Image: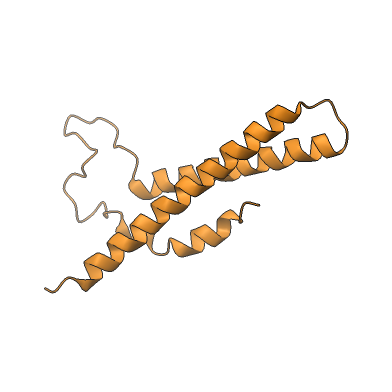
Length: 111
């Protein structure tokens, strides 16, 4: 069973504070001085990945429920969708673990 996404989100505390403020920075890494649109922030990308993992888990659950109700759903389709949801969740979990590990390493640095 895949744990709920809010449990992961609680582990990713303070990511909003990691994005640079528009007032203090002259140009962020994604901005080009010719007026091009800025690139998406890391926190935004991470939130998007979490949303995709959550939607994959919901789709897997819905397919499983359809199969259990006896609707016309192929067993292999349900199994593949469940495995994809599990793998995407595990990937997100490993990314979270690496972020926390990096944060802890930075906090151990002496200034």
